[in-house]
Amino acid sequence: MGTFITLEGGEGTGKSTQSALLSKNLSARGKTVLQTREPGGTKNAEEIRNLLVSGNPDSWSPVAEALLMSAARDDHLRQSIVPALENDQFVVCDRFADSTLAYQGIAGGVSPELIQALETYVVREHIPDLTLIFDIDPEVGLDRAKARGQNLEDRFERKGLTFHHKLRQAFLEIGRKNPQRCVILDASQPIKDIEAGVWQIVSERFL
Ligand code: TMP
Image 1 (tube, rainbow, N blue to C red):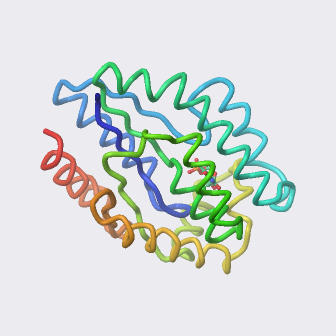
Image 2 (cartoon, rainbow, N blue to C red):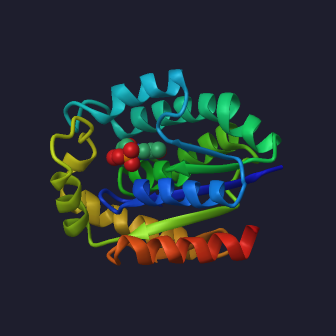
């Protein structure tokens, strides 16, 4: 089996940039990499993404979001992630099941039982080998996200500061509860320093 790495965190943490840099660095070392994201990564899952990331923040309830995220994840795992892992590849995935636990569960109020059931039936044994959690003050993160310019995918960004503070604590809690799998990184550092930190962790563990 290959190596499954996920990148997690709130809005504007720079994890998408780091996901691209990590994929590039792994490729430069001769590794075959699937760089992907959630919600999305397959045709069906990208269609579901379009339903979720734009429009009014209240247009879906947190339960509906968790179900849609999970439907997208099921397709993404079956069509894309699992075949890549079976081919001994690296999979670098920008967000995964911890985002459902943090956004819909802990910050959104969906019951832990439903979130756990979705993980049991959708994620199954495909738990990431490593999860990098990018931590930043949500006010800084949201400013960064806004500074990206016209963004049609801002439905979650507009959920309000209280939600985003809860979200930060949720990711920190996930990191603390899963110390073997998760590493928390200070996302306020310069891009180059974060890239070097990520590379040190990944190369020590997997190369
Ligand atoms: P992105 O902006 O990192 O591409 O992610 C899209 C949005 O989807 C982001 O605001 C977080 C949200 N999201 C959830 O709420 N739950 C999930 O399970 C996932 C994967 C993403």
